[in-house]
Image 1 (cartoon, rainbow, N blue to C red):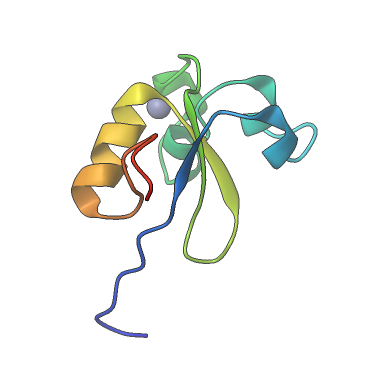
Image 2 (image 1 turned 90 degrees about the vertical axis):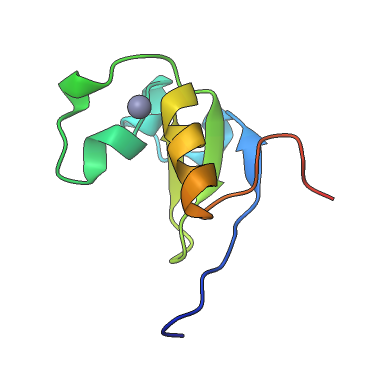
Length: 81
Ligand SMILES: [Zn+2]
């Protein structure tokens, strides 16, 4: 819905959420690799797994998590409920 913003839960990084062969499944940050940025720009370890508004799983590094929480896209890790 236009104008609405779903806040998705975030989860500790879990390889089982991600498609085999994807960047996320390698344990790296896919958030900084899919949105017009290069994977090389972010090669640090993923700490969080989350779904976007379309239900697609992404992995994120600590920096990605901070950005996403600031944007209201996901909940702070471990602070659901
Ligand atoms: Zn990243």
